[in-house]
Length: 149
Image (cartoon, rainbow, N blue to C red; front, side, top):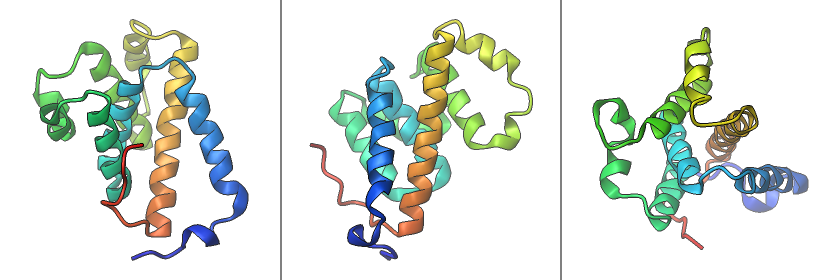
């Protein structure tokens, strides 16, 4: 059920969110990796619209259906690289902050693949999709209508 329509959203809200999104896209992080983490976080948050969007974007960028279907159980498969696994673990921990108590080992693993600046950008990407999920769920945006551009 749509609770807040597009024309009722404050004018600057989406502009600011898109600026952050543009920054993330230009940060140099692999766009398909961003789609994987966006899809996983959207699964965790139960955001149907964002899950629809990011799974379609991931497929458009070359992701396989098998890996998308298995994303919620990524630990039980061998479909994901070590780099993807550490990012998915990081995304899950930052989404469930109570689990982020002690993450030095995780940050050590992240540093095998990413610089501190890239880890900061990944943190922002995770925060951003969590923000999108919360906005979309609050507004009542209807899932299934997203089309890849």
